[in-house]
Image (cartoon, rainbow, N blue to C red; front, side, top):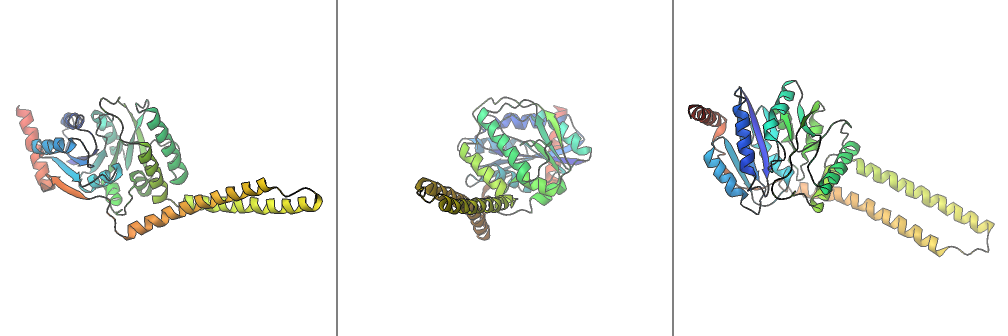
Length: 329
């Protein structure tokens, strides 16, 4: 029997997480041909999320819980969950209930058709306007810098085969970017349409600062395109400066009575000075990440784990026993 592992990064989800887990359980009861387990990763949530995870792990032996020592971000939480999963197919979804767990069968069926990765595609997204704008900017960045096919829709609800997960978790640097890792591993990717629900409780954990950090991480972790763009901009600015210098000399010779333009000079200085600072900032971002990686900064630090010592065989036995108890009940 094939096994499905569900990975859920958790942050401020004490009121929604249990519903998501129950929905996964009910969904998998309708697919008895698969075994499954669930990995819940608490990204140092400030509310009672860890207590909910602890209670779910006590109730269901096939659920693993991971508690981070501090907040490392959604992608670090996904990487931790992927490393603790052992399913033949791994499905990642959100903890707020907006990604419908009861439609996981669509992703699994598409994987069984032969695809290596499958992303959920939403016809009508229920995110806020700010979050939708951020998603569009991220979509553009993925196409330009990481070579994502234009027709491929990327979301936080996706399924991947085991070999893709094994390649993804080889990445041990400090700034993981899950989408980039998937695109680096395979291009045999498909979409399936699913429903995107409205958020019932709370608001998105992605602030403007976090979205900017995600974009920077995306285009500096897996692409040297920004450096190439910086080189082109630098060459263009140098060309503009050279042409303007020739123009100034010719103008001085042809019209010697016209005084040299102080405002034009200051504009050129400010323009080129600003461009130099931007290009140095891009270069410094790369160098800083290299420095942090050389210092072996961790992707995440785990404070506590729940049900982590069950092992694959024991998890499967516990789940089978649980299914039998449900059947008898």
